[in-house]
Length: 318
Image 1 (cartoon, rainbow, N blue to C red):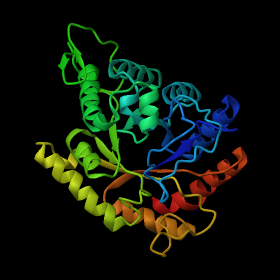
Image 2: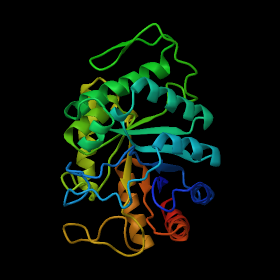
Image 3: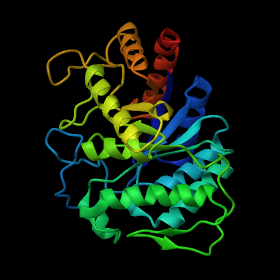
């Protein structure tokens, strides 16, 4: 199992000195990837249902200030040398796909092939409308098409595309990404549509475990969804064995055992032995990458939680 950590895009820790300290600390500890979330603007009034809380309410925990995801990843690429750079996740309809493909290819080149594109269809209608993105109600179809556009632009010497939302031809798209065929595409989301997208178009499926509508706290429930992804891959004529599986567990702070909605111990919380046992269960199902949140109000608190995990838990998982 390889592990990643989240990088703040807002708040007191989203400053150049703090970000540099955090990511170089994570790299020294042996984390294999860092992740950056995606908001461009945060509307002052949000009526959209947030999928990852029981109330459906989204709390930005700030005044709305947030660093742009791809710009931040470019900065972090220059502060690190080995840790991989994950968009977790990039909301596909927010950006023109040809421009996004160029920015992502540039980050991959500048980082010597360390970029991973985690992507999703998005959930906040108000942000879509502010950005004049394609219609929110068509975000699934748009996302599917944009993934196909990325693959075409990154791999084909003479890219041409004629879709419902994107058309181009007679263009040169260069330079290509450092990674052959482009950065790996990890499809996020837990809904049936997301599982279908991952199986048909993704290199990996990358769910968040805390979606109340599609809870994946328990390894057994995750196993069922993995089987669905593999089935969609087979139906699309793809080899399901070539699809990887990752898992996002941003609630993990290892400060205390937490309780899951059914009253049992929440996975990936508690003692180092208990967390390592959970990780082993996920690994047995084929999960090879796991991102953790390590929340904290100060830089020192975040770094301490990362150090604890790296020294107390990681050795038990090898």
